[in-house]
Image 1 (tube, one colour):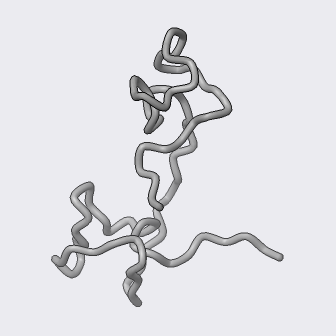
Image 2 (tube, helix red, strand yellow; image 1 turned 90 degrees about the horizontal axis):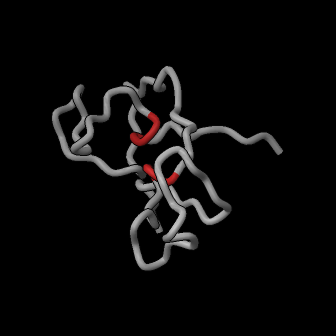
Amino acid sequence: MAIRLGNSCSNCDNLTASNECKLHGVHVTAGYTCDSFEMKAALKNDPNCANCARFHGPTCANPQKAAPEMLCSHWAPNNNMA
């Protein structure tokens, strides 16, 4: 089975930080896609405490040691979705 990124708005270069489509001028979610999809040139793969949803939170596995640039096995991306 091949693993591929979907043509969803979350992988599109036209998506702004406020979840607006630059091309169509509408609010979108990760489930949207269209024929004008433009794949982002690169995906950020920099897991560390600074971009972990648990950093300085009650579910942090290592609150006394957690610091930017560190990583543990409990890392969760800031933009996680259920």
